Amino acid sequence: MLRYWTAGESHGKALVTVVDGFPCGLEIDVATIDRELLRRQGGYGRGGRQRIEADRVEILSGTWRLLTLGSPIAMQIVNRDAKLERLDDLDQPRPGHADLTGAIKHLGSIRGVLERASARETAARVAAGALARQLLSAFGIDLLGYVVELGGLPIPVPPGSLADHRSIRDASAVYGLNVEQDGAVKARIDDAGRRGDTLGGIVEVRVEGLPIGLGTHAQWDRKLDGRLAQAVMAVQAIKGVEIGLGFEAARRPGSAVHDPIRYDRSSSHLPHLGYLRPSNHAGGLEGGITNGQPLVLRAAMKPISTLAARLPSVNMATKESEPAAYERSDICAVPAASVVVENVVAFEIARAWTEKFGNDSIAEAQARYDQYLSLSRQR
Image (cartoon, rainbow, N blue to C red; front, side, top):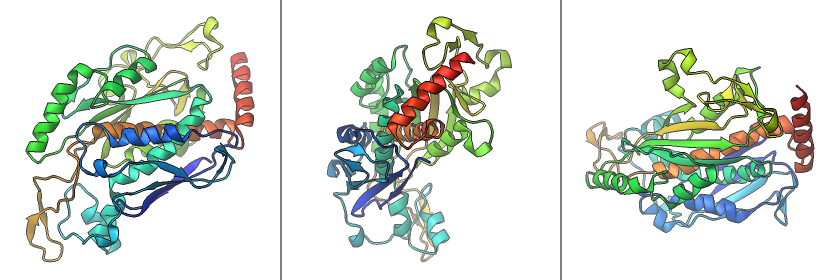
């Protein structure tokens, strides 16, 4: 099984990712991982921490001359702002954060909880996803994450290819697909900052090149839509996930929800085997299994819970009412969340891929993939 663990605190010495079950024989491009880490640090609305850190990954194990060995791959991201031992504890938990619940659960300090609960940990998850997407790329699978709403302002998705959308997204200060709208979105972020407030939003990820057959209908915990939802909901501040039409599907009759199926023999050589749809309301998943259409997933991020205009709280030592504690924070991290969600989706897709085609070696996976496509075309 392809899987990963992360370790490290926000102001500790480093963040560490250990990826297990990665196939042997893939040449790793470290610069590609570093680019994803840099994008995670960017986007309009980030705070001062991003001016301190310069996230770069160091591969500690699992490769030889950057070729994967099939053994666990350990990656490290050093924290420049490593000062954990010098930091004091907090007494006033921040509403919306893990401060209160975590401190009571562990009968310990708020500091001990917030350092691990911090979204700084997502850098380690981005590193894992950026590694996994190189595996996907070797088999023609590509994906892109972008912001579709920020602070209540919708950012429309124009028609175009993934390559077209990537160039637009990379030119946008808020990682949206309408650069002309950046000014209005930035103004909303600035206004929230002046008020000591924070903003949330919605991000979308699109995955193309998927074959029919990843995931399964056979067990509830292996359905790919459920696994994707769990992986994305586990990202800090994500409060909702939908695939395809999502909640909109509940408002329509079945005739306006389900995607008709047709067959085009001339495109049977493609991963969708020639089975086409005039719409993609299902978002590329039916019965917990990929159906050959683009996978489309959206995630809702709540506003960051550390506010400069501190919300009412309680001093846990005295039980008296006091304003919540304040730690240096962002006004808006929705653009960064689009990078994190994009990469956790990449890892979950790669997990499903290796379950279907094997994870001992790239060569064996390629042979099994080719054979599967050949057999499925006969079906």
